[in-house]
Image 1 (tube, rainbow over the protein chains, first blue to last red):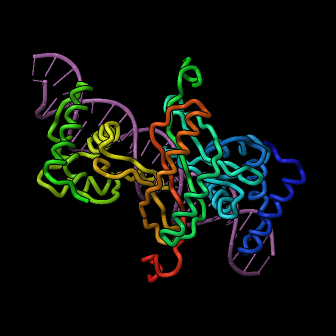
Image 2 (cartoon, each protein chain N blue to C red; image 1 turned 135 degrees about the horizontal axis):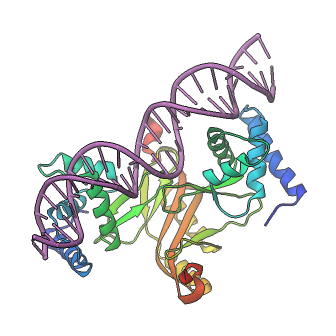
Image 3 (cartoon, chains in turn green, yellow, brown, cyan; image 1 turned 120 degrees about the vertical axis):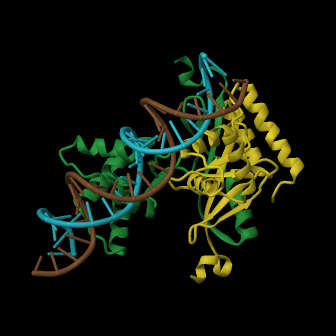
Length: 154
Length: 154
DNA sequence: CTCGGTGCAAAGCTTTTGCATCCGC
DNA sequence: GCGGATGCAAAAGCTTTGCACCGAG
């Protein structure tokens, strides 16, 4: 799940290249946020990331977190999700396999799954509607059968 | 697109049956909201619906609009979407073919499309993960090629 | 030195909540 | 008449914005 140092260096370089291309400044805050995100596993929201950063020596403001997340989404190092709630969820995306999400309607748990057939659908729609599909979001809302669901026991 | 009187009567009856099953009251506000929704075409957000209702003789409050939308979503007469923004979009769903959405990254225009293969993916995931998929949301984010996009001309 | 970026707090927007009033049952 | 539903407004929660200060280039 976690990246090794070499992989993380590649991530930094992608971000650096993006900042240079856009003539944006390479601030310590931006790299601190990138590093924190890649040290996390799974999904997180802005507030959780902000708290994590606040608990370190180096604090950043919410405004900067929002600003930097936008940049990271734009250069594909982070992906943003709206899982039906009015709260954006993020996750690091470098080195991760393309995947989609299933959300348990009982306990809100998020499960990831892969299905290559989604690509076929994209291709068909591209041809039919004459669009270039950049990315997609497939969310399955499902209820678990019996003891699968952790929160069933609560 | 619009329902004929007979179809709309079926919609009313579904809502009535749902309210009775749940022992909820059949208020005039609830039916007024249902009627307004089924007179609209395409997607709408809460504020737009609220304004429409406000402009009629019969006014309802935002709180009631939110409350009633939840009920209508629960009995499958209305579907709710989160198109990447922090603003829920709704659309009537009775008599509509199952469909998914493509959003133009240039002009935010929403295009509907159908693809039966999404059902196969659902079936596979159900078996693999032991979940009962209730519904899904597939959104393709795409940029139009050339003159397809209405806003390209702006 | 310049001007983009940051931090902080205020403002903005959508949605939820509390409470008095109202009306379906 | 009782208790759920409504209306209104206030509150809550996430995100954006304005402005003074800071620091990368």
